[in-house]
Amino acid sequence: MRKISSKFETVFKLRTPTKNTKLINVNNGQHFYKESSECPGNLKWSRTATTIIGNGYGSGFNQLSLPTGLFLEPKTQILYISDNSNNRIQKRYPNGEIKTAAGQANGTGGTTADTLWNPVDVFADENENVFVADWSNQRIQFWKKNAKSGRTVAGNGTRGSALNEFSYPSRVLLDSKKNIIVADTQNERITRWPSTFDPRTSVGTIMAGGNGAGLNPDQLNNPFGLYYDEPNQIFYISNHDSHSITQWFIGDYEPHNIYAGIPGRFGNSSAQLFYPEGITLDSYGNLYVADCQNNRIQMFCPNSVFGITIAGNGQSGNSSYELSFPGDVAFDSELNLYVSDTFNNRIQKFQRIQ
Image (cartoon, rainbow, N blue to C red; front, side, top):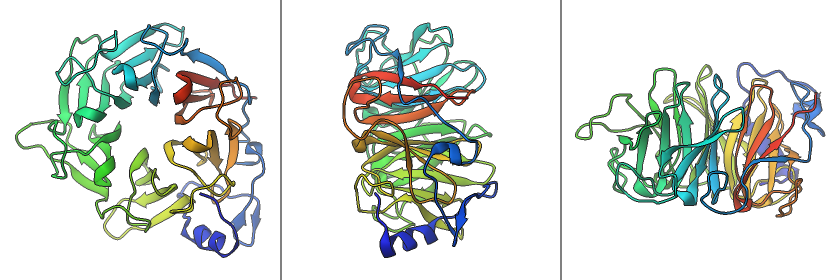
């Protein structure tokens, strides 16, 4: 995760800002931020959260069981939650209404078209159709709004390393052309699938990784979080097992950089991570990481290797200012912060302070 001395210089040199990055507080090429309000956007959040879904562990409509991935659809502002051990996707409307978007509402899991099995991530469009990373079923499922069952749009349901297979898909998103992009975790790769799926012929194209698990910039290590900066053609990928974030410029001869954390060195300093999971970027170029086993959300401002804790206090707990193994992060249109507080079986909202 974090380290200073000569290692700090090495990690810093690996960092490459995006084309739209604004740089501040420059000192000999290094950028230091002590508070989130010093970073681009001058952002700040309450350190005390409100629980917006998660009335205890269970399978009731307002209960969760190990929630993981979050997605907040930008046009509708509907929040989607991967309710992992309940084998379903829940959605929460801005008015607080909660419905099941995919899977069985009672939490029954399975391998059939009308069930899910440990879904870990979700992507939705403005029409409330959802794409689900159906983790234990080794497939991506598409569920139309109000559908009683889904259909496979990537993978063939078997675990493997062939290009028509997955080995535990952990993240799913769509690009502007409706291609499906998947973090294929234990195959150590990011693959792109066509928008039209034929189970006989459709295969994924490797966009990042595919070079085995490792600590080098061109290798991934159990990628468990994914953000796609499509205008700049950059993937940000969390390497769960090497405790780092990779910045992967798409293209055969483009650079691949360690953007946050120190590969292979977990820890709880401001320059380290400990099994990072979900990630996102804001419009100012700040990176946010669900630093899972450090029980905190870290903010990495542009061109800085030191993270700033904006949620959680580093200790596992269930108070309004604590987190327990957070799995993902998301923002609404007002940049309020949402966290899947996985082991507390709840979704926490940290209000932005204007």
